[in-house]
Image (cartoon, rainbow, N blue to C red; front, side):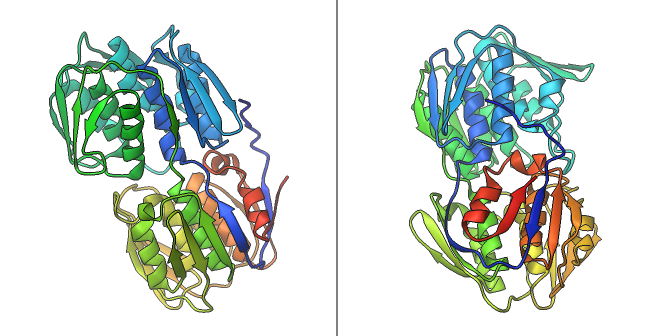
Length: 422
Protein backbone atom coordinates (compact mmCIF):
# COMPACT_ATOMS: atom_id res chain seq x y z
CA UNK A 1 0.00 0.00 0.00
CA UNK A 2 1.77 3.11 -1.24
CA UNK A 3 0.35 6.44 -0.17
CA UNK A 4 0.71 9.38 -2.53
CA UNK A 5 1.54 12.50 -0.54
CA UNK A 6 2.59 14.74 -3.43
CA UNK A 7 0.93 18.07 -2.62
CA UNK A 8 2.11 19.57 -5.92
CA UNK A 9 -0.21 17.43 -8.03
CA UNK A 10 -3.24 19.17 -9.48
CA UNK A 11 -6.08 18.65 -11.91
CA UNK A 12 -6.21 20.47 -15.24
CA UNK A 13 -9.82 20.65 -16.44
CA UNK A 14 -11.20 22.02 -19.69
CA UNK A 15 -14.93 22.56 -19.26
CA UNK A 16 -17.89 22.35 -21.56
CA UNK A 17 -18.02 18.65 -22.41
CA UNK A 18 -21.25 16.67 -22.07
CA UNK A 19 -20.87 13.60 -19.87
CA UNK A 20 -22.42 10.42 -21.23
CA UNK A 21 -22.15 6.74 -20.40
CA UNK A 22 -21.98 4.53 -17.31
CA UNK A 23 -19.80 4.89 -14.23
CA UNK A 24 -19.33 2.43 -11.37
CA UNK A 25 -19.31 3.64 -7.78
CA UNK A 26 -16.44 2.41 -5.58
CA UNK A 27 -16.81 1.01 -2.08
CA UNK A 28 -17.89 3.50 0.58
CA UNK A 29 -15.02 5.45 2.13
CA UNK A 30 -17.14 6.28 5.19
CA UNK A 31 -17.76 2.59 5.79
CA UNK A 32 -14.54 0.75 4.98
CA UNK A 33 -12.44 2.76 7.45
CA UNK A 34 -14.72 1.63 10.29
CA UNK A 35 -14.67 -2.00 9.12
CA UNK A 36 -10.88 -1.86 9.21
CA UNK A 37 -11.01 -0.60 12.80
CA UNK A 38 -13.55 -3.28 13.75
CA UNK A 39 -11.08 -5.94 12.61
CA UNK A 40 -9.05 -5.07 15.72
CA UNK A 41 -11.71 -6.89 17.78
CA UNK A 42 -10.55 -10.36 16.67
CA UNK A 43 -7.27 -12.27 16.51
CA UNK A 44 -8.41 -14.06 13.36
CA UNK A 45 -7.82 -12.79 9.79
CA UNK A 46 -10.49 -10.69 8.06
CA UNK A 47 -10.96 -10.17 4.33
CA UNK A 48 -12.82 -7.11 3.02
CA UNK A 49 -13.66 -6.66 -0.68
CA UNK A 50 -14.88 -3.71 -2.78
CA UNK A 51 -12.31 -1.55 -0.96
CA UNK A 52 -11.49 1.72 -2.78
CA UNK A 53 -7.86 2.60 -3.54
CA UNK A 54 -7.93 5.98 -1.77
CA UNK A 55 -5.71 7.93 0.58
CA UNK A 56 -7.77 7.39 3.71
CA UNK A 57 -7.67 3.60 3.32
CA UNK A 58 -3.89 3.73 3.08
CA UNK A 59 -3.62 5.99 6.13
CA UNK A 60 -5.87 3.68 8.17
CA UNK A 61 -3.67 0.81 6.97
CA UNK A 62 -0.67 2.66 8.40
CA UNK A 63 -2.52 3.13 11.72
CA UNK A 64 -3.26 -0.60 11.96
CA UNK A 65 0.32 -1.51 10.99
CA UNK A 66 1.63 0.80 13.69
CA UNK A 67 -0.48 -1.14 16.20
CA UNK A 68 1.09 -4.39 14.96
CA UNK A 69 -1.49 -5.64 12.46
CA UNK A 70 -0.58 -7.24 9.15
CA UNK A 71 -2.27 -5.35 6.30
CA UNK A 72 -2.29 -6.35 2.64
CA UNK A 73 -4.20 -4.54 -0.11
CA UNK A 74 -4.49 -5.70 -3.72
CA UNK A 75 -7.04 -4.95 -6.43
CA UNK A 76 -9.87 -3.91 -4.16
CA UNK A 77 -9.32 -6.64 -1.55
CA UNK A 78 -8.00 -5.88 1.93
CA UNK A 79 -6.61 -8.66 4.11
CA UNK A 80 -6.15 -7.85 7.80
CA UNK A 81 -4.59 -9.92 10.57
CA UNK A 82 -4.75 -8.22 13.98
CA UNK A 83 -3.57 -11.22 15.99
CA UNK A 84 -0.15 -9.82 16.89
CA UNK A 85 -0.78 -6.29 18.13
CA UNK A 86 2.09 -4.91 20.21
CA UNK A 87 0.95 -1.39 21.13
CA UNK A 88 -2.30 0.40 22.02
CA UNK A 89 -1.09 3.88 21.03
CA UNK A 90 -1.72 5.75 17.79
CA UNK A 91 0.58 8.77 17.34
CA UNK A 92 -0.45 12.25 16.24
CA UNK A 93 1.69 11.93 13.11
CA UNK A 94 -0.94 9.46 11.82
CA UNK A 95 -4.13 10.69 13.53
CA UNK A 96 -3.64 14.28 12.34
CA UNK A 97 -3.90 13.11 8.73
CA UNK A 98 -7.28 11.49 9.16
CA UNK A 99 -9.84 12.12 11.86
CA UNK A 100 -11.49 8.72 11.37
CA UNK A 101 -8.50 7.03 13.02
CA UNK A 102 -10.07 8.00 16.38
CA UNK A 103 -12.38 5.06 15.70
CA UNK A 104 -9.72 2.55 16.85
CA UNK A 105 -10.35 3.66 20.44
CA UNK A 106 -13.55 1.64 20.94
CA UNK A 107 -12.30 -1.71 19.61
CA UNK A 108 -8.90 -1.45 21.36
CA UNK A 109 -10.61 -0.68 24.68
CA UNK A 110 -13.03 -3.58 24.17
CA UNK A 111 -10.34 -6.13 23.36
CA UNK A 112 -7.45 -5.04 25.58
CA UNK A 113 -8.96 -2.71 28.18
CA UNK A 114 -6.68 0.08 27.07
CA UNK A 115 -6.24 2.59 24.24
CA UNK A 116 -4.21 5.75 23.76
CA UNK A 117 -5.10 7.92 20.78
CA UNK A 118 -3.84 11.36 19.79
CA UNK A 119 -6.43 14.12 19.55
CA UNK A 120 -7.68 13.92 15.94
CA UNK A 121 -7.04 16.08 12.88
CA UNK A 122 -8.59 15.55 9.41
CA UNK A 123 -10.63 17.83 7.14
CA UNK A 124 -10.91 21.39 8.39
CA UNK A 125 -14.72 21.65 8.30
CA UNK A 126 -15.50 22.31 11.94
CA UNK A 127 -14.59 21.29 15.47
CA UNK A 128 -16.42 17.94 15.37
CA UNK A 129 -15.85 17.41 19.08
CA UNK A 130 -15.42 13.91 20.44
CA UNK A 131 -17.19 14.55 23.75
CA UNK A 132 -19.94 12.09 22.79
CA UNK A 133 -17.38 9.32 22.19
CA UNK A 134 -15.72 9.87 25.55
CA UNK A 135 -18.90 10.43 27.53
CA UNK A 136 -20.37 7.16 26.27
CA UNK A 137 -17.20 5.21 27.07
CA UNK A 138 -17.19 6.68 30.59
CA UNK A 139 -20.76 5.49 31.08
CA UNK A 140 -19.56 2.00 30.16
CA UNK A 141 -16.93 2.17 32.90
CA UNK A 142 -13.87 3.54 31.14
CA UNK A 143 -11.46 5.90 32.88
CA UNK A 144 -10.34 8.72 30.60
CA UNK A 145 -7.32 10.95 30.94
CA UNK A 146 -6.55 13.73 28.46
CA UNK A 147 -3.06 15.23 28.61
CA UNK A 148 -0.29 16.34 26.27
CA UNK A 149 -2.57 16.08 23.23
CA UNK A 150 -3.43 12.41 23.88
CA UNK A 151 -6.58 10.62 25.03
CA UNK A 152 -5.85 7.63 27.27
CA UNK A 153 -8.70 5.26 28.08
CA UNK A 154 -8.61 2.29 30.45
CA UNK A 155 -11.18 -0.21 31.69
CA UNK A 156 -10.66 -3.50 33.48
CA UNK A 157 -14.04 -4.52 32.04
CA UNK A 158 -16.55 -2.46 30.08
CA UNK A 159 -20.13 -2.92 31.25
CA UNK A 160 -23.31 -2.59 29.25
CA UNK A 161 -25.46 0.43 29.99
CA UNK A 162 -27.97 2.82 28.42
CA UNK A 163 -26.35 5.71 26.54
CA UNK A 164 -28.28 8.68 25.15
CA UNK A 165 -26.47 10.78 22.52
CA UNK A 166 -27.59 14.42 22.49
CA UNK A 167 -26.68 14.49 18.79
CA UNK A 168 -26.80 11.46 16.45
CA UNK A 169 -23.04 11.46 15.87
CA UNK A 170 -21.86 8.88 13.34
CA UNK A 171 -18.40 8.50 14.85
CA UNK A 172 -19.67 8.23 18.42
CA UNK A 173 -22.29 5.66 17.43
CA UNK A 174 -19.63 3.56 15.69
CA UNK A 175 -17.07 3.79 18.49
CA UNK A 176 -19.62 2.94 21.16
CA UNK A 177 -21.12 0.10 19.15
CA UNK A 178 -17.68 -1.51 18.76
CA UNK A 179 -16.84 -0.99 22.43
CA UNK A 180 -20.20 -2.49 23.42
CA UNK A 181 -19.44 -5.67 21.47
CA UNK A 182 -16.69 -6.39 23.99
CA UNK A 183 -18.61 -5.20 27.05
CA UNK A 184 -20.28 -7.33 29.71
CA UNK A 185 -24.06 -7.29 29.37
CA UNK A 186 -26.37 -5.29 27.10
CA UNK A 187 -25.71 -1.75 25.84
CA UNK A 188 -28.52 0.48 24.54
CA UNK A 189 -27.45 3.41 22.32
CA UNK A 190 -30.32 5.90 22.05
CA UNK A 191 -30.56 8.69 19.45
CA UNK A 192 -27.99 6.72 17.48
CA UNK A 193 -26.89 7.77 14.01
CA UNK A 194 -28.87 5.99 11.27
CA UNK A 195 -26.52 6.27 8.28
CA UNK A 196 -26.15 3.29 5.89
CA UNK A 197 -22.51 3.12 6.96
CA UNK A 198 -23.68 2.42 10.55
CA UNK A 199 -25.75 -0.46 9.22
CA UNK A 200 -22.76 -1.72 7.22
CA UNK A 201 -20.55 -1.71 10.32
CA UNK A 202 -23.23 -3.55 12.31
CA UNK A 203 -23.55 -6.19 9.57
CA UNK A 204 -19.77 -6.61 9.54
CA UNK A 205 -19.69 -7.08 13.32
CA UNK A 206 -22.59 -9.55 13.10
CA UNK A 207 -20.65 -11.51 10.47
CA UNK A 208 -17.85 -11.72 13.06
CA UNK A 209 -20.22 -13.18 15.66
CA UNK A 210 -21.56 -10.07 17.43
CA UNK A 211 -25.19 -9.65 18.54
CA UNK A 212 -26.58 -6.29 17.38
CA UNK A 213 -30.15 -5.19 16.72
CA UNK A 214 -31.62 -1.89 15.55
CA UNK A 215 -28.77 -0.54 13.39
CA UNK A 216 -30.33 1.98 11.03
CA UNK A 217 -32.84 3.07 13.68
CA UNK A 218 -32.41 5.57 16.54
CA UNK A 219 -32.14 2.69 19.07
CA UNK A 220 -29.29 0.17 18.79
CA UNK A 221 -29.06 -2.80 21.15
CA UNK A 222 -25.72 -4.60 21.54
CA UNK A 223 -25.42 -7.79 23.57
CA UNK A 224 -21.76 -7.95 24.50
CA UNK A 225 -19.45 -10.81 25.32
CA UNK A 226 -19.95 -13.00 22.25
CA UNK A 227 -16.68 -14.48 20.92
CA UNK A 228 -15.64 -12.87 17.64
CA UNK A 229 -13.99 -14.59 14.70
CA UNK A 230 -12.58 -13.63 11.31
CA UNK A 231 -14.88 -12.89 8.40
CA UNK A 232 -15.19 -12.11 4.69
CA UNK A 233 -17.29 -9.10 3.79
CA UNK A 234 -18.09 -6.75 0.87
CA UNK A 235 -18.34 -3.01 1.53
CA UNK A 236 -21.47 -1.15 0.36
CA UNK A 237 -21.24 1.28 -2.56
CA UNK A 238 -20.31 4.89 -1.84
CA UNK A 239 -23.49 6.98 -1.87
CA UNK A 240 -21.53 10.25 -1.72
CA UNK A 241 -19.52 9.35 -4.81
CA UNK A 242 -22.78 8.39 -6.53
CA UNK A 243 -24.28 11.77 -5.70
CA UNK A 244 -21.16 13.55 -6.94
CA UNK A 245 -21.41 11.86 -10.34
CA UNK A 246 -25.14 12.61 -10.51
CA UNK A 247 -24.42 16.32 -10.06
CA UNK A 248 -21.59 16.14 -12.62
CA UNK A 249 -24.04 14.71 -15.18
CA UNK A 250 -26.60 17.42 -14.45
CA UNK A 251 -24.03 20.23 -14.71
CA UNK A 252 -22.59 18.95 -17.99
CA UNK A 253 -25.98 18.75 -19.74
CA UNK A 254 -25.33 15.04 -20.15
CA UNK A 255 -26.90 11.68 -19.37
CA UNK A 256 -25.12 9.22 -17.08
CA UNK A 257 -25.97 5.92 -15.40
CA UNK A 258 -24.36 5.59 -11.97
CA UNK A 259 -24.34 1.99 -10.71
CA UNK A 260 -23.26 -0.48 -8.01
CA UNK A 261 -24.82 1.30 -5.03
CA UNK A 262 -28.22 1.37 -3.32
CA UNK A 263 -30.37 4.38 -4.37
CA UNK A 264 -32.36 3.95 -1.13
CA UNK A 265 -29.29 5.39 0.63
CA UNK A 266 -29.80 8.71 -1.22
CA UNK A 267 -33.55 9.29 -1.12
CA UNK A 268 -33.47 12.86 0.24
CA UNK A 269 -30.70 13.86 -2.17
CA UNK A 270 -32.53 12.36 -5.16
CA UNK A 271 -35.71 14.19 -4.15
CA UNK A 272 -33.77 17.47 -3.99
CA UNK A 273 -32.29 16.82 -7.45
CA UNK A 274 -35.77 16.21 -8.88
CA UNK A 275 -37.08 19.42 -7.30
CA UNK A 276 -34.27 21.34 -9.03
CA UNK A 277 -35.30 19.81 -12.37
CA UNK A 278 -32.84 16.95 -12.85
CA UNK A 279 -34.26 13.75 -14.34
CA UNK A 280 -33.68 10.78 -12.02
CA UNK A 281 -34.67 7.21 -12.86
CA UNK A 282 -34.00 4.69 -10.09
CA UNK A 283 -33.04 1.06 -10.60
CA UNK A 284 -32.30 -1.65 -8.05
CA UNK A 285 -28.59 -0.85 -7.91
CA UNK A 286 -28.31 2.27 -10.07
CA UNK A 287 -29.70 5.64 -11.07
CA UNK A 288 -29.96 7.18 -14.53
CA UNK A 289 -29.38 10.93 -14.45
CA UNK A 290 -30.72 13.11 -17.28
CA UNK A 291 -29.91 16.82 -17.43
CA UNK A 292 -32.34 19.63 -18.18
CA UNK A 293 -31.81 22.90 -20.08
CA UNK A 294 -33.19 24.83 -17.10
CA UNK A 295 -32.90 24.26 -13.35
CA UNK A 296 -35.00 25.71 -10.55
CA UNK A 297 -33.74 27.33 -7.36
CA UNK A 298 -34.22 25.47 -4.09
CA UNK A 299 -33.97 25.69 -0.33
CA UNK A 300 -31.93 22.80 1.05
CA UNK A 301 -30.84 22.09 4.62
CA UNK A 302 -28.30 19.43 5.60
CA UNK A 303 -29.33 17.09 8.39
CA UNK A 304 -28.20 13.77 9.83
CA UNK A 305 -29.40 10.76 7.87
CA UNK A 306 -31.99 10.30 6.43
CA UNK A 307 -31.78 14.05 5.81
CA UNK A 308 -29.82 15.72 3.01
CA UNK A 309 -26.16 14.65 3.46
CA UNK A 310 -23.66 17.32 4.45
CA UNK A 311 -21.07 15.52 2.31
CA UNK A 312 -23.03 16.53 -0.82
CA UNK A 313 -23.62 20.14 0.21
CA UNK A 314 -20.58 21.66 -1.58
CA UNK A 315 -21.31 19.77 -4.80
CA UNK A 316 -24.99 20.70 -5.05
CA UNK A 317 -24.07 24.33 -4.38
CA UNK A 318 -22.35 24.36 -7.79
CA UNK A 319 -25.51 23.05 -9.46
CA UNK A 320 -27.65 25.69 -7.71
CA UNK A 321 -25.31 28.38 -9.07
CA UNK A 322 -26.65 27.45 -12.51
CA UNK A 323 -30.34 27.43 -11.52
CA UNK A 324 -32.83 30.20 -12.12
CA UNK A 325 -33.43 32.48 -9.14
CA UNK A 326 -31.86 32.53 -5.70
CA UNK A 327 -31.27 29.41 -3.61
CA UNK A 328 -30.54 29.02 0.10
CA UNK A 329 -28.35 26.23 1.46
CA UNK A 330 -28.38 25.77 5.23
CA UNK A 331 -25.58 23.79 6.89
CA UNK A 332 -26.77 22.16 10.13
CA UNK A 333 -24.03 19.56 10.68
CA UNK A 334 -20.59 21.20 10.41
CA UNK A 335 -20.20 24.87 11.29
CA UNK A 336 -17.19 25.60 9.05
CA UNK A 337 -18.21 23.89 5.85
CA UNK A 338 -18.39 27.06 3.74
CA UNK A 339 -14.63 27.72 3.67
CA UNK A 340 -14.47 26.81 -0.04
CA UNK A 341 -17.02 29.41 -1.17
CA UNK A 342 -14.35 32.02 -1.93
CA UNK A 343 -12.82 29.56 -4.40
CA UNK A 344 -16.15 29.08 -6.17
CA UNK A 345 -16.68 32.84 -6.31
CA UNK A 346 -13.29 33.12 -8.02
CA UNK A 347 -14.79 31.02 -10.81
CA UNK A 348 -17.80 33.33 -11.24
CA UNK A 349 -20.31 32.10 -8.67
CA UNK A 350 -22.28 34.66 -6.69
CA UNK A 351 -22.52 33.15 -3.21
CA UNK A 352 -22.88 35.06 0.05
CA UNK A 353 -22.53 33.50 3.49
CA UNK A 354 -24.84 34.56 6.31
CA UNK A 355 -24.14 32.50 9.43
CA UNK A 356 -24.84 28.90 8.53
CA UNK A 357 -26.75 29.87 5.39
CA UNK A 358 -25.33 30.21 1.87
CA UNK A 359 -27.33 32.49 -0.43
CA UNK A 360 -26.66 31.46 -4.02
CA UNK A 361 -27.65 33.68 -6.93
CA UNK A 362 -28.30 31.48 -9.92
CA UNK A 363 -27.35 31.48 -13.60
CA UNK A 364 -23.75 32.44 -12.88
CA UNK A 365 -21.33 32.35 -15.79
CA UNK A 366 -18.54 30.03 -14.65
CA UNK A 367 -15.05 30.66 -16.02
CA UNK A 368 -11.88 28.67 -15.48
CA UNK A 369 -9.50 29.80 -12.75
CA UNK A 370 -6.77 28.51 -10.47
CA UNK A 371 -8.36 27.28 -7.26
CA UNK A 372 -7.39 25.11 -4.30
CA UNK A 373 -9.27 22.34 -2.52
CA UNK A 374 -9.79 23.15 1.17
CA UNK A 375 -11.14 19.70 2.06
CA UNK A 376 -12.36 16.49 0.43
CA UNK A 377 -15.91 17.41 -0.62
CA UNK A 378 -15.03 21.03 -1.39
CA UNK A 379 -12.37 19.70 -3.75
CA UNK A 380 -14.98 17.60 -5.54
CA UNK A 381 -17.18 20.71 -5.88
CA UNK A 382 -14.33 22.64 -7.51
CA UNK A 383 -13.81 19.80 -10.00
CA UNK A 384 -17.52 19.91 -10.85
CA UNK A 385 -17.36 23.67 -11.32
CA UNK A 386 -14.38 23.18 -13.64
CA UNK A 387 -16.38 20.72 -15.75
CA UNK A 388 -19.09 23.37 -16.23
CA UNK A 389 -16.79 26.39 -16.66
CA UNK A 390 -15.56 28.08 -19.81
CA UNK A 391 -11.85 27.60 -20.44
CA UNK A 392 -9.32 25.85 -18.23
CA UNK A 393 -9.51 25.31 -14.48
CA UNK A 394 -6.56 24.29 -12.33
CA UNK A 395 -7.47 22.60 -9.03
CA UNK A 396 -4.61 22.41 -6.53
CA UNK A 397 -4.16 20.44 -3.28
CA UNK A 398 -5.93 17.47 -4.84
CA UNK A 399 -4.55 15.18 -2.14
CA UNK A 400 -7.71 16.18 -0.26
CA UNK A 401 -9.83 14.79 -3.11
CA UNK A 402 -7.80 11.60 -3.41
CA UNK A 403 -8.45 10.89 0.28
CA UNK A 404 -11.99 9.86 -0.69
CA UNK A 405 -12.42 9.47 -4.46
CA UNK A 406 -10.88 6.55 -6.31
CA UNK A 407 -9.43 7.45 -9.74
CA UNK A 408 -11.80 10.42 -10.08
CA UNK A 409 -10.06 11.76 -13.16
CA UNK A 410 -10.16 8.38 -14.91
CA UNK A 411 -13.86 7.89 -14.21
CA UNK A 412 -14.74 11.39 -15.44
CA UNK A 413 -12.58 10.93 -18.54
CA UNK A 414 -14.44 7.70 -19.36
CA UNK A 415 -17.65 9.78 -19.44
CA UNK A 416 -16.20 12.36 -21.84
CA UNK A 417 -14.71 14.94 -19.48
CA UNK A 418 -11.41 16.62 -20.30
CA UNK A 419 -9.46 16.29 -17.05
CA UNK A 420 -5.94 15.16 -16.31
CA UNK A 421 -3.63 15.05 -13.33
CA UNK A 422 -0.24 16.79 -13.60
